[in-house]
Length: 170
Picture 1 (cartoon, helix red, strand yellow):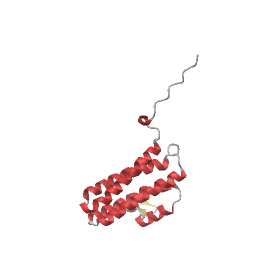
Picture 2 (cartoon, one colour; picture 1 turned 90 degrees about the horizontal axis):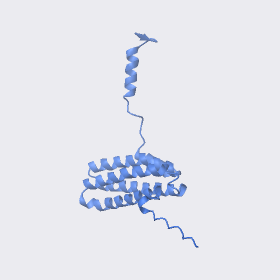
Picture 3 (cartoon, one colour; picture 1 turned 60 degrees about the vertical axis):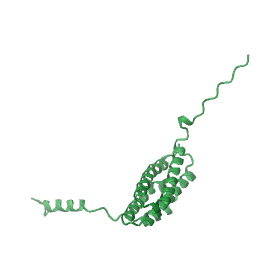
Picture 4 (tube, one colour; picture 1 turned 45 degrees about the vertical axis):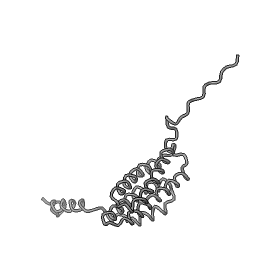
């Protein structure tokens, strides 16, 4: 069979070859960090933190496998600082998280992932490197609590009972 002068098998082979190619050059950690630092929108900063955080976790895992726990600590501290920056940008631009929750929700979900990554790193790291990682973990938990309180300010258990109606005067 011929399709326009070319073998149908050759065309299919080329399509399969192109489909199996890895995606084009992914952004490096430095590129993602530069984009994050330049971003002025709090919502976009929160969304970009997903990619940047994943790249930072990958870098921390790679350094951990190589036994370079100084790099692991510095990378996770930078992640914490990036989360803090994103939270502050969101609070500045969209102070009411309950009404404009888009960036807050995405940031909170990724922050949960970050807390798990730090906890796993704590388990794998030698004793002398644990105290700074424990501080990073505590800071991330504090930021997560802050985000949850902003997203859900009226929690059922925290509501005060309604004041009794005033008595009518005869």
